Image (tube, rainbow, N blue to C red; front, top):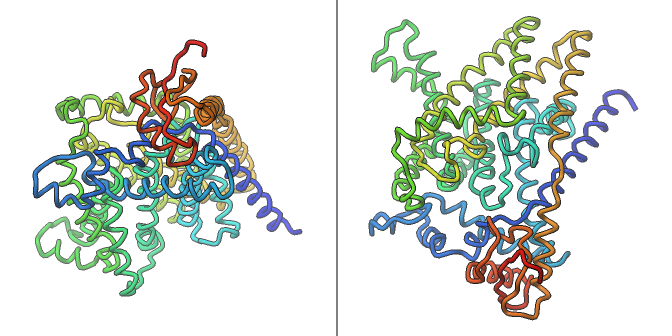
Length: 484
């Protein structure tokens, strides 16, 4: 076996091992406290499901929760109602729920790795050496535990995976052709059938995750500025004619991709004005902006995750400028400027999205996801470039440094099983209980955000447990720290 094939085998083994480990991390995450409300579903969620595009709400003038997130609610409900039942052909009811939660997260995990690796390496062949090298560079930074609280992609709560990670990663897939146009200069005439099919995700995505409309509109603004800057006023004179000329330079494929998703994004933002969620707990816009700097500070100072990633990026920029200042290298460095513009505009607009008491400083790992992805992309493309162009002596030193960073990230991302075993034990006790009201130990949360001390608050959960076949009838429960 030659060195190239041996490297491919080693990389495949490493990636499969990492993905297997990540799957078990996802499997051992407890069931979150909002899952039942979205799957049973609750009255608030049913209002959204009954009015997919918010037309009834606009006619009646009556506000309701999440009016612009129908597809996230719909896919979440359908998945968690059907997949656990299907999984019970192979395993027991309790295991089927944990497996279902883990499967959607590992799917997003793999899709994210595939998209970034394909963009950076320039190939979609998963057995290509370049693709595998880029994938191996990325996987240590996708944290399921460890530094997840500051740079996570998948949410630990399965519910919010459908509202944040899944829509954002699918948006990346939708926007992949734009990358080919800007970085690879591939301009192809779009086929009619493909153009028609693009309208489907253009409608679904902005009516799914709360981050999608903002991301789509900011990217469209940046692309417009790019064409205006390069074609609209080359002689520093801005006029209507120059703006029209700049617009004419934009390839039709870009219009086909961005125009429909921007229109639906604007409509989604309009619907968001009628959201009744947390309206009694909101704070003035000025106060939100005053909280944002603290949110940014906490994001980069409360764990090693983000600071270490920024350090690696800084080292890469220095090495490219100092040792490999080729046109390709400088193009990569220049891309960081656009990432910075995107991040700045995104952060400045974030307080306009409203206030949530569980996100007191506006910025948190979930609203930070677009910036995390942008930073991981730059890290990946700059590192891959350096690996291809550095001299042997410098490369060896650089690899040692990379392995140290990898070790830090991988060491932090450990499997946590204690809460899982505690919750599962309680579910088994409930499943085998002969009583209509069962007392369970208060050693963990059971499909909730906190222990349930009053049996009436377990009603929705008991309906869900019976639906999944975990219990043979609805058995309400409460938790007490006293011995049974």
